[in-house]
Image (cartoon, rainbow, N blue to C red):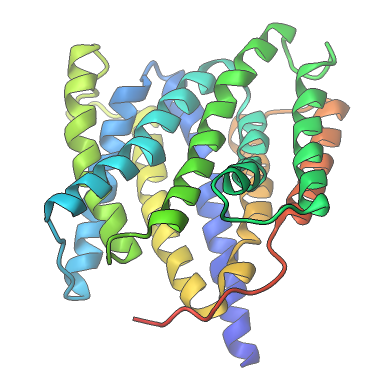
Length: 301
């Protein structure tokens, strides 16, 4: 049993490290002149290729009934296309580490949405967690010495769009289920549909990224982030089925920590004391909004 928990911790760290790469890789991609629709198309396409191989290796299939196609479309829109469009645009103007801190708001924003949908009960402790998270955003935006350029604060609302959509996605799946699909099927179907939606948008806006050489750091960043996300998502779902969602939810801390670490190592970013104070507030807020009681056991497929 102890050996199993050691494995669970390693997988948790892997998920956090892989997802934490997302923001620095986005910064590198947009720094090379690439824009959101072009990046998102290849994120969908590369993720779909990897997930299709995983699905085929386990003998899975991909249902294509109308209700499944509708579900794939919704997940592609609210889980990737819309939030990532905002996130990649914000990445042009904001430091990568700031984006990683902002993404920590996902479970905090999910709480009031769940309350509005009648899926959760009021909790003063979790409300305090939400307040601390919003306080962290104020610490980033308000002091003139917090960001490298005070004008960057105007882009923070755009950065908040991504965690808001991710929070909506989580509540949508919790409310309506996954139409009998497992997580790999959901992500594979959403990636295929999303690629079909993103390709014409990339072409029409002149943002399509040619797959032909020469390749540079921005191209490598797109490949790394796409494959890392697909692998981390698959590993995370496996972890939930074995160790439970309460244990797996701790990945939020690790994603934020690795996001800042990767930004320092890969981008040489530095932060003011206000940003570090915001990070502390965000971690406290995460601790308060995390679920405390384990849910019903999840059957292992």
